[in-house]
Length: 191
Image 1 (cartoon, rainbow, N blue to C red):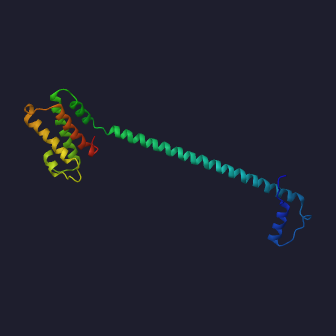
Image 2: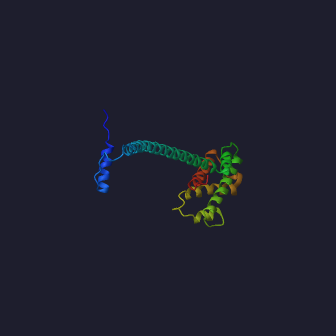
Image 3: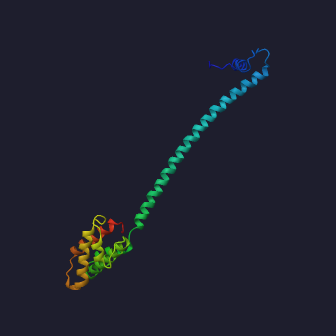
């Protein structure tokens, strides 16, 4: 048998406590006691139902928040991935294509184009100087860790530009020089 709450007893003692007047149960209309008992019972049932509803809504909100976080995180990841793809420099793609050619004149052009891209990078970084050589001299090795690589690549460019066909180029030289330029550009997220 399920225990029950004696609402009449609670009401009588509550009235006695609040008003200081002892209440005789026979003097209290039965309808009043029935209404108080019914309201208390309905109130408790409603309170339990609201508590269950509150827990249900809270769980749904936590799930929605978690789902929203996952969706936002995925969007940010896709955005970063898209930015990385968009960050590819089309000029660098063209230079890499020329360097992978089997034609020596395209190798020379790749080195010259890479040096033009280096000049743009140095200017963008605010390194003072009229020429790439001057800018490299003014470069700070503490802020430009691939400065030596830039110098080596620029020296090959000068030989290609000033000696022309008199400067022999091998596929190995081209790959090494283009790799030096690539490492410089990657340091500054230029490609």
